[in-house]
Figure (spheres, rainbow, N blue to C red):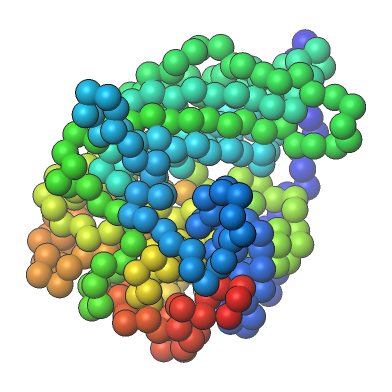
Length: 345
């Protein structure tokens, strides 16, 4: 009989104070290895990495390549260890959704996915529970997003004897790029461009880098996630890209909105001036990692078209602010300049 492990103690955001020093949070999170700029700019070469001279090509975030017959393809790899022991189906669906969201932001069409499950003992009831749930999540997500599953089996790595490690699922998503002229990259493009958030924000910091690194709270539930919302978001992005209304697109991921915008600004050196949502806690709005959100850049000449289309699609969206020459501002408070946002500065 397959057994589920005992649920973790329920965490609520009310356990952490609402009024906090946002700048202190930012500068502390800059030291988080999962958010540090070097994590997004390494090339794993044998040469010594110089943070001050690291570059980030337009396609680095997406793994773009040409096949021998000239087809432009995209590939992205993601991993997840949060809550596989408690809700493997939902956790796996969330992982697939993250990969899909990242790929559609570029303008690629997700085609096929493969997976590998590490650090479980398949002879143990809990290992069987994880493998069974992960497979259900994988199949359901592929059906929802119309993606081919390269192998309907969950390949797993038997693991024991190396101390406590989290069960981890790794997926690789392959996609095609139908029109290279409509590619949308992640970097901020021009001073003055408007920045919008597509999707809804929540008072949610579950399983975020902010909660785990800054507040040192490791036991919390999965972030807000609805796979049907993700499917709808995918369709909206396809329409926006087809209409040529976006100058940049960034799925809100690790580190929340703030670090997603920071990653978008670093390649070009542009900053951002944004206003938070008064109906959502500032820490959750800036650092929460709830799903179903994309930050997009829109040229001033296309703002009216963008707003009209989004209104007609009846999808939640929020005017965040605009791209700056380099300064980072939140609710009229300056956080300095983006060229200083590296450990070496």
